[in-house]
Image (tube, helix red, strand yellow):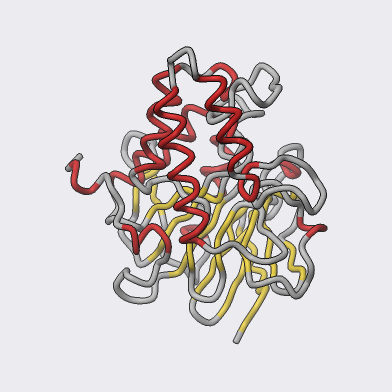
Length: 294
């Protein structure tokens, strides 16, 4: 891959506005290491008669960027719980390498911060707890290159993992994440590693503070904590069998709660004039649910 393409420009990491045209944003969140469910969700546009594919299946069985006018956003919590966290991250990397700059995006979720704070968060035997130093380093470097962010501006909605009652400003949040990653890289693998992790965790509570009440950071708050009149945000994080709308906040964490049933997994789509969901039905078809129009 051309190294010059590996670093996303500052403007492009914060917004889709610099892209040509008016691409529809396809958002998939909370995969949690469940690769097959993610594949099914990502193929939903291809299996609906009214939409062009965002990805297709290649000759080797892997998903490939389809080359249509989309932005594909992985909206956090791609790892832990399921068996295929590494494969899910590999899928993101492969699609990003094959798509034009800014067309495949990755917003960090609270589970990915387990790579930041291995000695701060108590964790079970999961992907982030087992991650090697090289895996952690690569992820932190992806943040510095703008390939992993907190949020970006879509057409009318800010896309971010969990959201906040006051909204999430992409520039402020993404710059804070990059500063945190820079400090963590300085300590990684040194005798100061744990001390620096704890200092960084304390320095950026608006991002990292764990919890379920109003003091939690924007990677942690559940939909129930977001008022209906919050700024427009398109989020994941709060598990649901169906896409949900609460005033100005639209949520689509659709994989985990549907693992034990046929169908339910899907993606959210934000076009200039509407927001909708494409979800799998029990028979393998694709259902469309309009969440906002006009």
